[in-house]
Image (cartoon, rainbow, N blue to C red; front, side):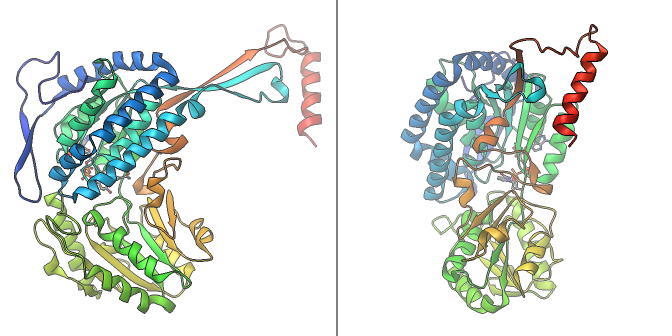
Length: 499
Ligand code: NDP
């Protein structure tokens, strides 16, 4: 059962409501309840029951049902994409692409959960060779997912699909800007869960998210959003020692080596920087290009970026969040004020709610356009003398989410020097589309992982079991042990580890 626009069962009174808007027009596209602490607690309590039922089904049956959900998502792809477009303003094909990737991840998580999480035997070691040792990864129970608005399907599904495949129930708090997407997602699951509250949505503002963090039945919070909010989420979760996965923003660099395919690198830089109006946590925000190829690379970037248009029917849509427009304007002004040169656009490109592409070169490294997440269609391109300097600058921010490297011969070598969670070589954002790869950052970009085997394990707790198969001739964990037994054990240790 999913939470919808009606009050949650068990909660009396009519809740306050809020409206979600189409950022292209300002039109109201939906009205949703503001779920308060009681409503959130009721949802979590219902999810606890659903979690027990879901866990009891076992891997094969969960896989079958998640396969049915996958098919339902494919059937509804256009309807869901329309809701995404209405609430974010992004082009419908971008919304479809987001859904395609989410479906692929769901499929992977459902098919690999048993292999990754099922009981497996491990070697007990020489001293405990009388034990049969095994590990299993058991579901946590109820996972609270708090999501952002920029990829309102793909991003939260990186937690939701993996948490469900691991045997948990989910209560999801979408961004206040994209509540309708959350509700539509949960509705799409309804037919496979026999009316159980396996995946519910609670809507509202920050306080609703905070209530989810506080709810007693929550086993883990998976948060995606800004670093500032992540700190508040962690402080709230600390009250109950609730564990968290934190996926925050980034200031992702791209390094363009002297031997790179410059046409492909320029295309990737512009797509990575401008698609979704630059509102991509792993989007390209800064490019470090080697002096030897800088002129040619910049010319290609400029040529492509100049052809792009923002607009309701443009190459990319509006800024989804009105507040972000000011951040982009501030970064453009700071970069230019400190001596950066605008090659495409400028301050006049930043309009409420649409921002045309901006490319600025030779921006001082202490500009906010280089140090802070812009989350808009602004690309900073700086020249560097060599790869070592590119790596040094790439690693110089507090963030460490993703990175891109264009190099024919040194891609992997450069990647290993980058302080971040993911690297795309000769492609852009490609790691996010590979379901078997873990996704997450370091430093201000957060910790913990979604996607892949690590992402499945993130929503479980390991349980270790050691079963004695036969007693050892030397018993040392008993009050009846003898000094002869200890001497024999020390003899074995000296022989095995002392030489
Ligand atoms: P925010 O941090 O503003 O909000 C994220 C979510 O947290 C929203 O659902 C928000 O609700 C909720 N929230 C706000 N306050 C609280 C609180 N006190 N307790 C609990 N929950 C709260 O981020 P945005 O929505 O603006 O998303 C943009 C950010 O997300 C960018 O920094 C971007 O880089 C990052 N991001 C990271 C990704 C990753 O995987 N690493 C992927 C996508 C985005 P409400 O909206 O109602 O305020």
